[in-house]
Image 1 (cartoon, helix red, strand yellow):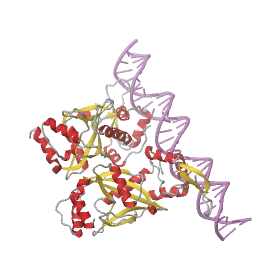
Image 2 (image 1 turned 120 degrees about the horizontal axis):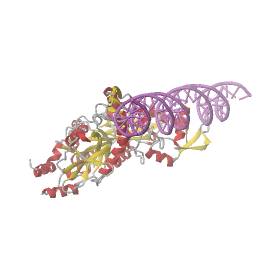
Image 3 (image 1 turned 60 degrees about the vertical axis):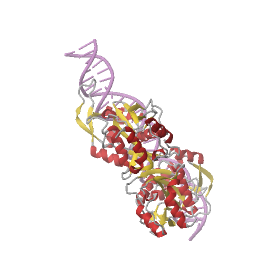
Image 4 (image 1 turned 90 degrees about the vertical axis):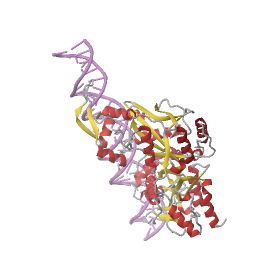
Length: 257
Length: 257
DNA sequence: TATCATTGTGTCGTTAAGACACAATGATAA
DNA sequence: TTATCATTGTGTCTTAACGACACAATGATA
């Protein structure tokens, strides 16, 4: 299908596929080494940035919709995702933006489900950005990882959604284990600590960190040290997946200073 | 407007007023003395029970919708409410139920926005049930307070919504102050403790409870004791509204054993 | 006036967490 | 070959929060 036809079809018939007035926006955080980024899409023509989002199929659980969006923008499966808040400002309509978009495509349209107001549900995900080749959606010209320190202007309340998600991500470090899919199979304690420090954007005490993480029992200590490093070789660990997944559901419950 | 006309109008034209495919369900907990109840509506004809719910007006914030629903079912204003979860099971459609309802009213209808699937956002509220004269909505024959220990069969996933809300209410005791609007202007420490014990459904240590509550600074100790009680007269307290409201936003952060 | 259930206040031990010290390690440089 | 030194592994000390518990004060009732 040509681009124009795809767009026209989406605006005229999309409401036969999707629920109306409700959308899902995903705040996909990307980590690697010591960097934390977030995936943003740049709209065609307008150039403004937005969170990857989408709609809920008529016969689809909202969680599935979030996973589908993640899969379509990153290619990743089986990533832990969580709904964290509903954003329902009455001004959440992209009517003007969408009409301008259609005009640029060369389509005239008076009415569309896409012109209506959307209540949106925010989801978070945390992935390794080196394992992702970002894929823009049909409305976007680019899909890129952005440093949290230098974010571009964003559409509607997406900046607020992002900020809320980051808060939630940080709070969740106290309740949910983090690191699986983000670190190599075998990793060292300093590597895990850097992950936490990067998310929190502050330093943690090395010794107290180790004590707390060990206390959660989500790690298995391996009989192996990292080779070829200057100075003392750190021990390798790997996640104890059984305890890790239990903690994902049940929670950890410690406090990071 | 006659009942039949009101119903017919709602099913045929309601989507001009409200957002589609999204609803709000309120879990309104009621407290008094040492009892915790929840407000449920009994559907006309079918007799099954449901949480008070409703829809979001096209130009209304979702929080306002929740407050409007609370106001309409209880008459209460200015009650602290919180969204706590989105329920989006693909099977969340009341098509069969609504068609049966219409049949009982004496209306035939093939299509309606009310037959579609709804994603619903759960809200919690906690009120004094002696200050409420429950008002059924147009679909309901009765509106009653139910003990949490003896709940009737409920529509769709409303029982699950209620259980999730109760969990959230209990967890929130550690983060948000509770009691304003539920206790008299002046109250005693044992009265406040009973509120907490009733919500948690377990006993707390009297002395440790006092220590923690005092630590939050949400109370002002009055120079007055309760009169006419057998045994030692307990002191009166009242809420320090400034600190109370600050804690409502910012959180408390203690742990009840 | 004694009783007694209840309230006000304090103490003790345990645990979790923050701050910090010191020995062990192992590649690198002298 | 040996000393250096940044980094890691492990432990201790102190403080704060909290659960368990003791005891005196109160005030209507018997």
